[in-house]
Amino acid sequence: MSPTEQLEAAVVTSLVEDAVTAPSMHNAQPWKFVHRTGSRSLALYGDPDRTLPHGDPEHRALHLGCGAALFNLRVAAIHNGWTADARLLPDPDDPWYLADVRLERADVVDHGLADLHPAVRRRHTSRFPFSEEQIPDPILDGLRSAALLEGCRLITPGAWHADAVRELVHDAEFLEAGNEAVRAEIATWTRTGRTGEGLATEGIPADALGPRQYGVSSPVRDFDAPRRVADRSVANFEKHPQIALLGTVKDAPADWLRAGQAMQRVLLQATLDGLAASLMSQPLEWPELRSSVRDPTSVTGFVHMVFRLGYGPPGTATPRRPVAEVLSFT
Figure: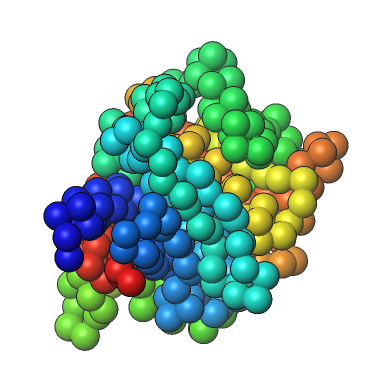
């Protein structure tokens, strides 16, 4: 490998290290990156070996996670003086080929992207209680603008709609509790320290579970519903959780990738604004519930993520696989 190619490899590795800090359903990390040595092209693939057949049979959540990683890549690129021009779904014959990214030296810095870089490593999902302090309207407006920049809409539902969404979360919990295959899949990606569990570089570790919720006021997913972690504390969560819905007009794989990028842009902006956030996809994982999450008066036809936002602990970092496992050079 020539010195120039070695430099390229170091740059690409650095970009992917930032990219893979993105969230993904159950922290499955369903992405693969391929760099063609000597070129300025970086391909993003979904990993068919890291799918969730029961919780995500259509691979919508996989696209969201990979879209979030793609957005991180764009942020990391501009931070390092590059632009990352992404072409989504470049090969209609290969549904796992999600994006082709062309890296070019940046003539002008996109500060809207570059300013988000400090949040890339700071952003963590928080499953802890938030305070009752209301998020100021200017901050919410900024989060809505972040989603719009990626071609999506972020909606903060009114009282009746927020109550309906919380009820749907509880309905999803009941469906999940009655489905042995779904429960087993979640257990596969939950790390409680018991013998025989999966790798420590993936899934949800015990220290990221947060406390058990006393009551059901807040839409927080409990990955340890079977109570396998004996020493988890119990806490009161906020009585009036502040939620937001991310959606698109259409519902095709390209829309899912755009929604994933919007999701990450919102999360990074929220982190910079001092907000904590958790993601709730449970009611979106059940076809019989998903359509009911949307506001029937909104032009946003399909909801892809429910955010819980507020002021509270920032959450615990979850593990990531080594870059050598997700990045290859050809």
